Image (tube, rainbow, N blue to C red; front, top):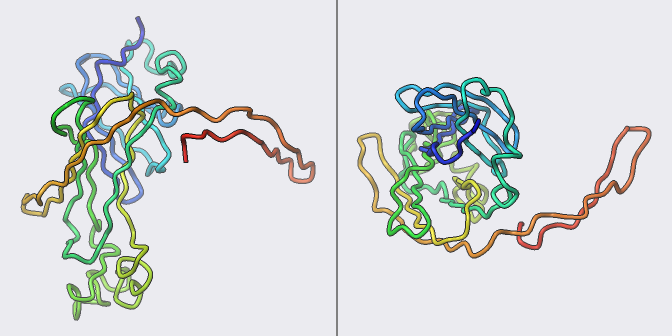
Length: 245
């Protein structure tokens, strides 16, 4: 067999400065691990002490990640359509969000999301972590930053009282930190969210369980609706999935 899907475990990811770092663990220590982003082979590398780390441009919320261990001679071979069935490619996902509110979050405070296996009692695997405000960028705080540069932490780059009032953190449509899981099979998944400060102190964990009952139905009836000669543009039509928004 040239590829192995069940030997690679996703460890976590972190987005900062326009890049996303993805970490995984593999039990096949001498075989390269491939990273697929939304069905396309993005990168591959050999593990070091059983670990791999990929750095890619910041992912979109709709991007799906797949990891695959392959035989050394097949490192550049695209196995996506063979290794991942249609059900996996269109599987349900879990979205976790938390608002960037003016509640004392500091630039180095980190938001972390843990997820457990289907049927597990608790969420023990770290799937995502990121800073609330990398390098203080956009860190609002009328009360926190008064007198220390633009009503925020880093002067003109910070969201201040005037910016936030009625718009961002100081209103009803505050910015959200968002993590979206890879496709998951049906089951009940425990979720845990914590905030950690620069000293390693953790907040009280927010926990919940998410039930995934079925796989969503994919879109169908894809067809060419029209063609515009002047711009060489095709317009497509399709029937949207009743399960995916």
